[in-house]
Length: 199
Image 1 (cartoon, helix red, strand yellow):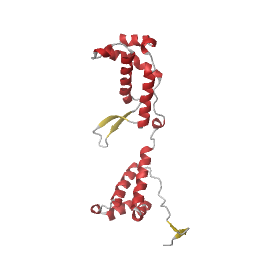
Image 2 (cartoon, helix red, strand yellow):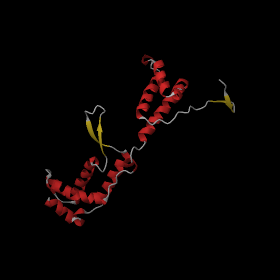
Image 3 (cartoon, one colour):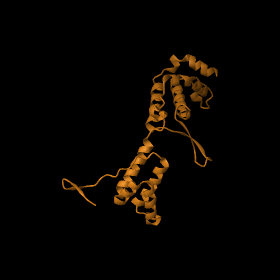
């Protein structure tokens, strides 16, 4: 094979690997590359290389020439895929607004009224702020915030999770905390307090 020298250094062309968009293909490639990279003999490297070659000939050749480069390449593809937004909800995360906060006040006052802790029943800014912030944390599971239902491929187990980028969830909670603690509920929102006490 001919060599190309650039300023006395042998030029090695970079393998051109097309962008992968299929999650199953990426998982398969990760497993196959691990066999190559960690030199796992008992998993029959030759057969694994054949499978890798059938899926991505360029990547298989790179794994033969430089297993470290192939391993890094597939892991970067996988990391990029995990960071990619999957819907417009990920691009525009929910924001906590003053209207959201005020809509929660009557519910929180009602909860405080029925609290088993006697010191939490007192209508004070501190107790309202405490109840509101706990209500905000519970609201992360609401449809319009970060609720996510997940079902295993077998279909037997279903889970409800908070799903979103960590920074978006912390931003949401931070906005809520700032708004809640900047408000004087006892002085400014007697109507909402009365509505909560009446329910």
